Image 1: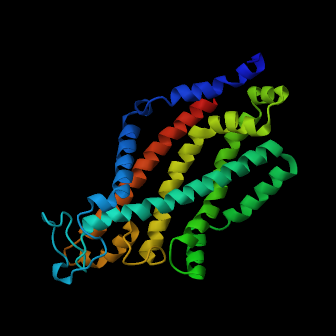
Image 2 (image 1 turned 180 degrees about the vertical axis):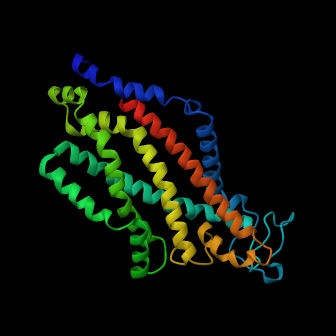
Image 3 (image 1 turned 60 degrees about the vertical axis):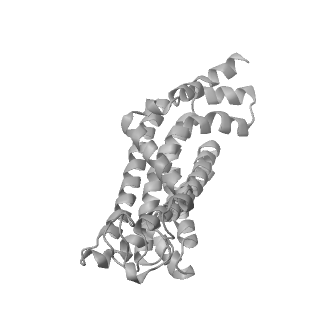
Length: 291
């Protein structure tokens, strides 16, 4: 290994050392990780652990209070609320995950292209992003649902497009600092391919910051998709979804049966708080890595 290449490797190695062990993130982030892991595990094992079919209605058992047979009670059509919470975790997590993966992947690629090429390409990308910024992501999702019909596909695509400019803006500054760093110049002098520089040095050193952006956007995507389901533009009945459950259980609150709306709303809040706490910690690590 040459001296030039060895000078390019310390930032990556430092990032690798810092990422060893979940406990290094601190106890609040560790608790959030375990909680999110538990929610994901419950969603994956829903057919095995759900006590009842979430879509089977039984009007004779409508609006039952919590009991041994129904730990969270039943809704207005007699469906088991706990089972719907468990199954609802699937779409409530999958939708935001797709939005985040798409927007972070596209946004990071655009940001790296912008800072690497520079010049007119950088200026053109900046102006194009300003145009997209003029349309709020939630408004794009509502418009897409109105044009293409209720469901998840169109809103997910619209939110991914709407979130991409934010990823580019947040990623561009640290990417520009790395682009102008001496070890990147050393890699270019050494003749390393652009793909190798991007994968081995730029993306690895941007990983903590990118992870922080992804977690924060996940919470925002969950809020937007839950709002669409609440308005009837997202997941359609009888499919279980937390946002739709908040809407369907709203009328039962005045009747003294708030468990459906409260349970679904509480799950949304807890997941969003967990990902935001984790995202803040990852952002701090990212800033420390880029100093």
